[in-house]
Image (tube, rainbow, N blue to C red; front, side, top):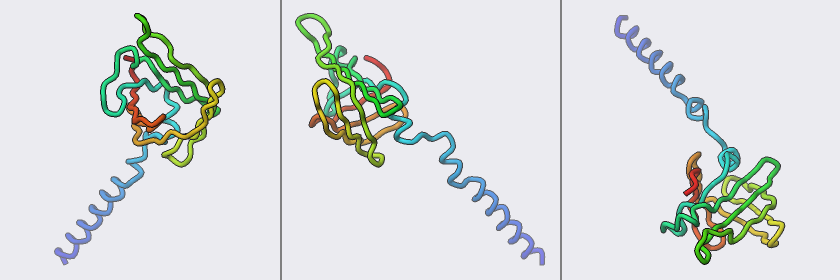
Length: 138
């Protein structure tokens, strides 16, 4: 009788621990891909795994509510850090891995592929390059 009571107690404790540590805890506070994309500016950090210049690290992509997008690219000009390209447009997130973009000024229309995303790092395949972004300019 005592052995059966111990087994019932052990099973009850195990069930409570299992339910208490269920998948609901894993989802508390986590963000969707869309929320992470639209969490502020994403600054370029690397291109194809290689470091880029401090000037190029000012380049950013910004996803806004209403499916708006802004992209600004910098390059080292004659002696200054100059804007190479600046454009606004719209985007549509397809699933959690493709961003369909349409820019207004240069008429670019295409897709960026999300290789990975966390709240602090975004890796996109765009314009034939693998570009790593983070939340810090420079």
